[in-house]
Length: 119
Image (tube, rainbow, N blue to C red):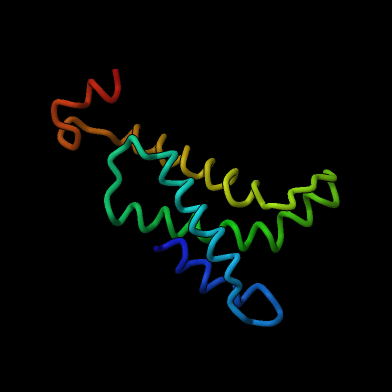
């Protein structure tokens, strides 16, 4: 939900016609799923999930507007489906979130399962 909110706010700002692009909403939904899928084994609070989803929702519109043209012109990549912006960068954000949650894991949060999650 937070990822679609971020994209629906940012998408009209980035493009000249100032209208909401539904493909950006779809991409933001997939980006939010990619972030939480990478950090899925960790205990994420609802507030943490909102922040992660909001950040994930910013990645596809910004990536398609600024990063994809640079990758196309300089590296000659042709990412026509936006896999880099929809799955790649949000996956990296999810991996960083999982790493942060692993570093912050306590026995109080996981109870007796801490040794099962982190052998």
